[in-house]
Image (tube, rainbow, N blue to C red; front, side, top):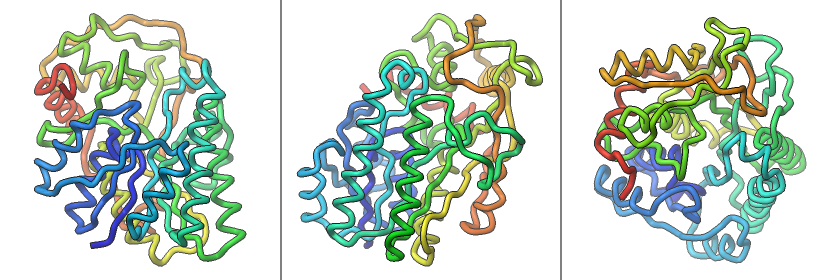
Length: 337
């Protein structure tokens, strides 16, 4: 079995990707500091898959711990999820974001190079497109960032492109995610943020389950179908399968290849609330709040390149995403406890 180092593997997208990696015959090794995740998720993944998960509890800012991980294991490739990811928080704490995301990635790349492991799947984001000039967004769209979180992802992409240019042995795929929501169909793993959620779906489902009194909708005066922000929501299981597809592709890839993972469909905040209520029978009270710093009006993908190169496309729809999110949240009202 080929070993895959999965940094941030206990997180939301990471944990769902572990399930798909194991199903595809890979052996993931998780490297996580559990700053925004819980160790129990790995027990749940083990129950779902019948495989115990190898886990290294450490920080990507700890270069010695990274070196130790590469000494202990012979990795075929790395999937790099580890990083801070809240737009609003990044505006308030930019240095923390640059330190974690950019310095952490540099540490990882240096250790990978020292051990001649040069296959990387990077967890990027549609935020690298800034405020898009045209929709849907394809991989040739101009890149910019409207917040420090996006800036860290963009900076890392430039680093990866320069690295691949300097040494043709590197095989790097940068997966630009749009907005992952949903949960594993078992209801055993899902999105479980610390504190008040920064992402919309866990906020909706925590209100529906009674953990929070009401949802705040940030801005209803955007130039969109109903004034609320429009995003390309993608089921986290589809997204996880995209990483397995990227691993198959990267073996033959050359250089730095950015690929969007999205559905190509835009859904507004109000439309998502309606879809959730229809799919689950729950009511989600909400209030309109001011726009959030760094947010944009609309963002959805062209997913043609993923279909062409990875032979991948999203299969699950908004109703599936809502039902699976609710199954997770209603089965685990307090998250992983």
